[in-house]
Image (cartoon, rainbow, N blue to C red; front, side):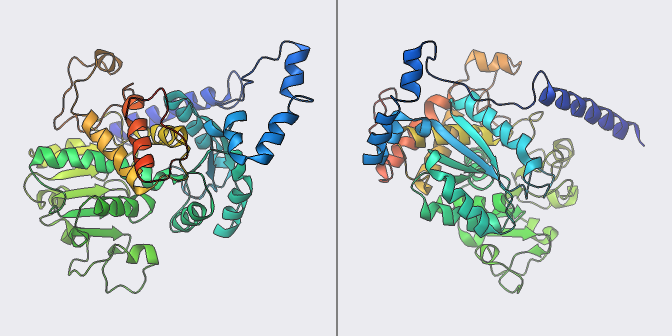
Length: 425
């Protein structure tokens, strides 16, 4: 074993052991349920349960919307998985996905004050999963689908959106796409390029890759300017092995390999696997390229390799130890916050695009000292190493929820008045 590999192995061992201790002590798990009302007296208990609880029951039976007034529904999200695509670990099963779902709950609560029940569903077929979520949905104000493998994730999400009257959001699809889009708009601005003319290569045709293509097209990218690749190469119209979701991103092209696709490309977006982009491929891209190598923990091409090949690129990864981390926590807690606060029936495309622009615009604002202190920086401003806000930027909660809520109201899916604690419309 080389010295570098030994150092990586030692580092992995250390963090793995620390993570096991973190999850096990002083009590197992990362989340808990707390009582939010007083239970100190006999009268408190009479109001919390029988006989007092009967009156809110009657009110909700008469008007289901009163559940938002008298229960925790309006601030409660279900984080639900079938365990088929957990992190980079694959199909580990529903129960093994529970630490990740609990972790998602931690992020919802910490960043946006949203309560979460994590739910792990043993379901072999999409319809079983859909039926399970349908039956438990009345409990929640929103559904966050998580770590569900493609192509089933597309079928599951679409069915639930159509059949439920609360937001259903597959974060691996739309959360990732929103952060990619925000960072890409800023990177294009820096490189003097435009979304409508940029030639874009997307390596990885799973949930994140296809969702990113769809969102970018909705925002003005030209469909024919995309080359999307899966394990078999470029997804082109001549292939006979495409499911409906891949067929939706297929184009007429002579390109067949990643090497072919990268020739003259303006943008590379990788949501695939480690070290799949060679220095030669990067060198073949157009002037002033944009590289989003988002495979975790090892990107498709490492920044230290990329900058030796191209000194004119803007680069992002999925890691926190490099500049420009594409991190879903920049989006999903605040998107749900805005949707819940106006009781949106769904998180539609308008709301997603509003979140994109809120993130993009925030990066152009002066960075507060507290953010600099949190990251040990003396200065930070919009530029090649800062195309997305930092996850610990407290302003995210101030700008994204109102933007999402405003889009919900403008697009007709909001069912509550403009929140009193939000800025004036």
